[in-house]
Length: 345
Ligand SMILES: Nc1nc2c(ncn2[C@@H]2O[C@H](COP(=O)(O)OP(=O)(O)OP(=O)(O)O)[C@@H](O)[C@H]2O)c(=O)[nH]1
Image (tube, rainbow, N blue to C red; front, side, top):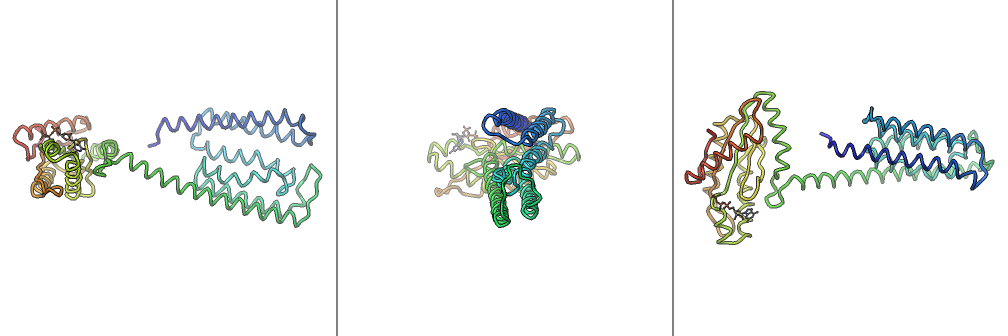
């Protein structure tokens, strides 16, 4: 699901960029005659550009077609520059130096597809402009030999291709980093299991699906018994190693459609979609036995766990209520002497 605040931020950012473009266009329209004597065509192109940019601003501000904002912005940016290019010498125009920036802008504000389409369009446009250079009006009246035009066309295409490759490279790195950051954000650094945030993503989805399909759904809370003693007697480092090893044993004891997470401290949680209470109890018993039979850290310490299990009770049940029932069961297990499994009442 898209993040609402992120979408709002993107919308605001797009509006600010269009406003800045508008200010630049109006400023250049007013300031140009002071700086240089220009052909009247430039005046009309500036007016045309201001109309296009203002229309884009109104469309983006109305927020009626949010999906099209990026495509419309990129198309508008091309519409703004192309008339200027076609009256100022095509590939020989000074404005042509801006063209290689377009694939990068496409990659930055759009993505792979936008950047590729932009590059392809520009390469075809530059090819045409180079071949039909004689037909392009040059209001400055300067003349360029064919050789110069071919050479400029060649370098321009090369620069556009290079910028397109750079855009793709940037996107690859960006995707890689985002994936890594997301994973880190959802992972417990010590045990490398899902953390609460990571679990919540799967938990809410699986719970909704279980309600929709009316399939069984269970949740298991697991707490290491007397863990404080391990820390106090052998130190925090040994405690950490035990936590990592317990997490590893639990992870190996569940199936691929189960979700194990560190719930906090020495407590773990397992979400069991498509699992009946009796099946969950069986899995819990196997986990309890595995931990009881193992030894932990280089000191070969014995550890036991207590487990509380709850199941989904119909449409009106929710995550918090299920966790609360599992926690109550776990508490009962602790009271009854630990190293045992308790089901919800
Ligand atoms: N080494 C280590 N200890 C932790 C970590 N997180 C929590 N703990 C310790 O876990 C212990 C939990 O202690 P208690 O809540 O009293 O529970 P317990 O000693 O396991 O006793 P019962 O749960 O009643 O069986 C505390 O000593 C915490 O400091 C951690 O990341 N690393």
